[in-house]
Image 1 (cartoon, rainbow, N blue to C red):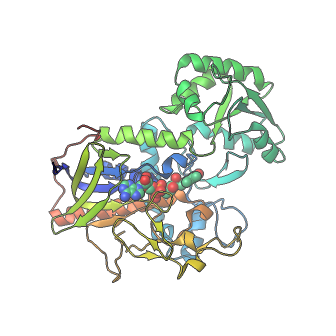
Image 2 (image 1 turned 120 degrees about the vertical axis):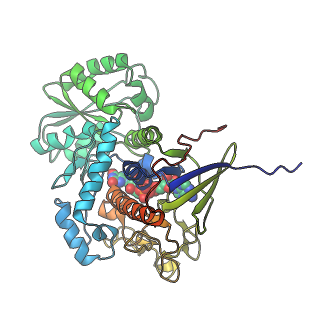
Image 3 (image 1 turned 90 degrees about the vertical axis):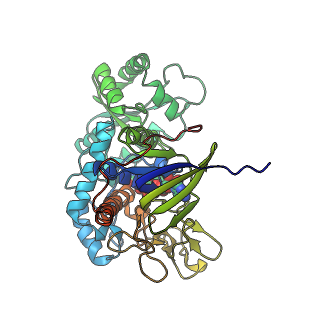
Length: 449
Ligand SMILES: Cc1cc2nc3c(=O)[nH]c(=O)nc-3n(C[C@H](O)[C@H](O)[C@H](O)COP(=O)(O)OP(=O)(O)OC[C@H]3O[C@@H](n4cnc5c(N)ncnc54)[C@H](O)[C@@H]3O)c2cc1C
């Protein structure tokens, strides 16, 4: 018998599609503005991130790294006027970073505040990069490097993808007091060990005590220890503080290769904190249909228990690029799969990449994306907003190569801040005020509900 499946229905003011940094930040900004919000996102690039929140670390045509990102933005405005970071006021950029990081801090992942200069931070291989905000668990690393303090980098038997000797080999020339040590992780001394498993194990006080003893044994005269990022998944600040207390040493984390614990932390914190603040969260699912009518937008998706339908008065599209499925590369063109929005892209496939992989100008494909107007509305083929209800945020927006410019989180946070501001103006204007008590099913949607 052919049964017609009835969708589970949700009604909201704002629907956010995509659970990367842009989608999460948009949801944070929306709940802070008391906009009833639903977030639907498939898993994506957020678990790959180092945990550093970059604003601007490199500029095209300039060999040296950007130490003052705010000055760098002035240059960007002049040389790349269409760049999304060039289209947002500096005050809004700072406000967006502050609002997002304070939300993370309240959930147990404290961040350094966006300062006037970039921080020189360590990468998993022991090279250096410029970033704007670092998690508190990593902050002692840049400080120790700046002071050239005696420091021991510790790795673990059986841990792949992070080597203290590699860090020292790459950084030791600029950091003379740096040394490498290897120890066994408590109760996991045999076979392969994994960062996420170690991180969860360190949430148990007894494991921390045993690790602290092992760290004291290899610290020597150094008062600073660098570890791969394994200091807990939930409330890493607490794990970090406790390990410092137990060892009497200053401890910092270095991001590991993706998928990394700092990315998993962000995802888990946001997935737990946002529903508590009233967001209807539909995790790990892909929106397959999106349509607009006079009264609102309809999003269709499904989970293992059947179809889900969300009705919203406005939508933020934050689906990322190729890795996350926000853009698709076809033999003949790059497409935006959900609405078939026009994508600004090189004229033909032969122009996607330059001849040399390491070409300093980067590859044209990496600047592909959708166009938005001043109110963050995606433009249709006629150059006009394709819906007054649709806004876009994150690296799906064209005219930026976030990998080269070291500006992934910066673009995500800044464009989310703008998009939520524009959506709020639309919602307040179009409805004569947001509903004071929206009739929402505020929850995490889990199978069977
Ligand atoms: C290896 C790696 C390292 C990184 N390191 C850093 C770093 O050190 N510093 C930094 O600032 N940034 C870093 N980033 C960048 C950062 O993690 C984000 O990728 C970037 O900020 C873009 O965010 P976004 O939200 O626009 O897109 P994404 O992070 O790509 O998120 C898009 C989301 O949309 C979802 N999605 C797509 N289509 C649909 C659909 N139809 N329905 C529902 N959901 C959908 C995806 O599953 C995904 O969750 C790194 C990224 C990678 C991959």
